[in-house]
Length: 334
Ligand code: SF4
Image 1 (cartoon, rainbow, N blue to C red):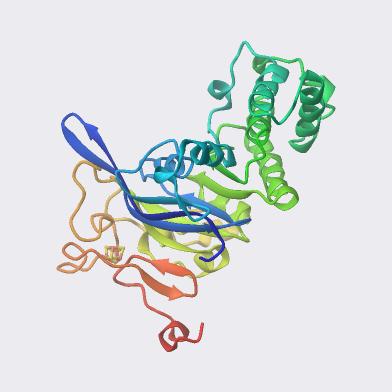
Image 2: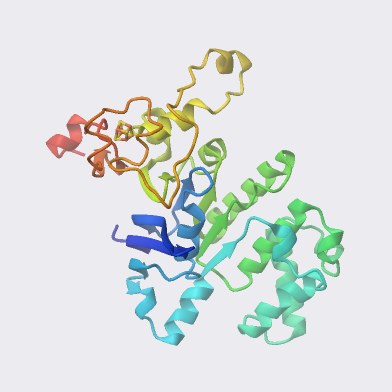
């Protein structure tokens, strides 16, 4: 992708656990364009959070390269790395533990503003904090500025976490399960606030969630990547992934999403997996790692040969032996 802000090139992350190597991320390549919104979905343990940490520079991958604005992140000078770490911010899942309980909102937000020179003194910091609280929907700001985290609701705390990420004028935000710990009723307004940031400030997003229904809503104009056991098994512009899923795992996830209309949900055919147990990362299955659960598994092929990524349609890739290329891609007309 020519206007990529962040690229992962064949990134693998292994951790040592009781003398064994756990492969949390397996050969992931992903290019995210400036202003784009990409969502990674998958069950817990699929590697999406580790991938997010790698993108944000919190983890150095065991293999592969992370490229920010054309530069290898782990070959940057200390000054360049500082710039990159400021430009790429992460908003964590848990707003309860990510905010310091003994700091007021003013203290939480003024510290990075003053430390990184985005405000010259307390007066400038205060003006900037008011502006940020307005942006994240904590209005009127005077009502929140001197409060402590325990005096706020979960949704309000998560808005403060987003405001803190915005203090350093980020160009890229990794939102890791950023709305999963708040009530369903306020999830929508938080998602709308994040969408607004993309539109008003041109922030690029990597949104991480286990909830494909949420991903579908939030990134309809972006791309969804589906991860399974550390691998990116399918990635596509959202409408094409929802309407024409090519990987058997994506099809199973989609079949489990309830529809708004109860009649549709009742009549929807749910794909039955061969097994509900997710294999251990310590002992990955041979061939396609989804084969012990896949209802369409082909004996002798899926359990022996690892499928290669295939471009199904433009920008839509799937890693499955059953995925077929559209005629337009075969003819090179897309
Ligand atoms: Fe299922 Fe085989 Fe495709 Fe894997 S490669 S998802 S086992 S059909």
